[in-house]
Image (cartoon, rainbow over all chains, first blue to last red):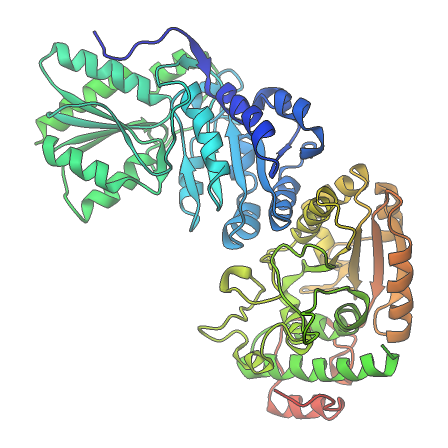
Length: 317
Length: 286
C-alpha cells in the first residue's frame, strides 16, 4: 500500500487555470495571451477577473510570441498560452530570437503536451517540446505532475524573472501533492525513499512511478522516487545524492527519449558518476489517435514499463 | 531641428555605415544607406526621448516608459541603427569600430544580449519586429503612457507570414499608438522584389487589413519631417499607421544606388574612398 493516496483526479491544465486565477487577483503585472484556445487552457476565470489584461491573438502563434516579448519590454509578465505543439515547435524561431536570445520575461505556458492529448493524434501530440525548449540558452523548463503542483508552479514562474516553458496536459490524473504547496524552481522532490534503484520522473509519469515503486516493493525491491518537475535547471545534487545510494537509475517521461529528462540526467552522470540507466519514454516515434490510457500502455509509458526498466537497471549493476 | 542640420547628420551617419562595413568586410550597406534619413529624422527630431535633466543626454531604459521607442525589424541594416544610436549619445561613438568583430556589443544583427544601450529586442530573423512593437504599444496603453512606438520593416520582409498575423492583429486591437514603416526599395537579396515575390499593392493590402496608409519619399529629409509630424497628429483614432517609404538602396553613394548588388556586400579600399568622397565629414569620423 502506497504512502500516497488521492481523493480526486483533475487535469493539470486546470491547475494552470487556478494559478492564473490567483495571479489575476494578486499580481497586476501578469497578462495572458491565447491563440484561440481559452477553454482548453482554462483561462476563463483570469479573463473574467481582468479582461484588460487578456489578449486574444487568434490562431496566430508566431505573432503571439512577439507580442508577449513586447509586453515584457513594457514591464508586464506575459503568459503566452496554447497547445504545446503550437507554442513550441511551430514558433521555435520566434521564441529563440524574440524571447530567449533577447532575455525576455515571457512565460510560454502550454497544455495538451504528449500522448495524453489522445484522439487528436500525432499532429497535436508533441513529444519533442522539452528537448526544443531546454536547448535554448537560459530557458527554464518545468513539467509539473498534478493539479496542485501545476497551480503552484504557475504562481512560482510569475515571480521568476526570465523565460520559462511551463508544460502541462489534458487528462485527469490523481491529485496527490499537497494543496497550497510551495514550488521551488529547480528543486527536485523526493517522494519515496529507497536504496535499490532511483526513479526520476516528470509530469504524468510521476504518479506511474509511485505505482511502480509499490509493485517493486512487493518484489522486495526498494525504489527511490524523485519528482523532477524542473528539467532545466536540473537538480543535479538531488540526482547525485540518490544514485550514490542506489547505483542505478530509470528516467520516466511522456516525451521522446531524445532530448528529454533522461538524456539531461545521462549527460550529467556521464561526467560525474556513470551508472546503469534505463529510459521510459517514446523511442523515436510519433504518436497516434486513441484513448490516452491505451496510448500510454501501447507506448510503454506506465507503471509496468517503469518496473521492467527498473529490474533491468538493477541487473546491470 | 532645421532640415539642413538633419541632412548634415545623415551625411556623417552614411560615412559611419560605410566605414563600419568596410572595417569588418561584411554587413549590409545598401538598406542602411537607404534608411539613414528616416532614422536620423526619428532620433534627432520626431521621437520624444528620455533625457537626463542635468545635461540633456539621452538615458536608456529597457522599458521605454514615458518615451517614444523604435524597433528595427529588418535587423540586417544594423549599421544605420548603431551609427544613429551612437551619434545620439546612447553609447560611445568609438565603439562603432568594433562592429561585427569578436567581443563586440555591436553584433552583426542587433541584440540586447550584450547590453548595448538603445537595443530592446533581437532582430535579424525577419518578420518578428512588428509583433514586438505591437506588444510594446499595448503595454504603453496598459501603463497609460501616451508615447509612440515606431517600427521599421523591409519590403522583402513582407514575404514573411508573421508580418500579416501582426497586420491583422493591430487594427483588431485598436493599436493606435503605433507608426510602422516599410522600406520600399524594391530590392531583396535575390533581386527585385517584383521578381522574387511580388508584394503587389502594399497600400491596398494594409488598408484592407484596417491600417491608415501614408506615402513618403524616404530620401527627402524635408518631406520626411513633414510626414512624421503629420503621422503623429493622426494617431489615436483606433487605427494603426503604416508609412510606405520609397527609398533608394545605397542612397547617397552613386555607384551603390539602384541595385540589389550592395544589399550585403562591403566596399573595398578603393570603393570606400570613392564613396566617402561623396559624403562630407560633418561631425568627425570615429
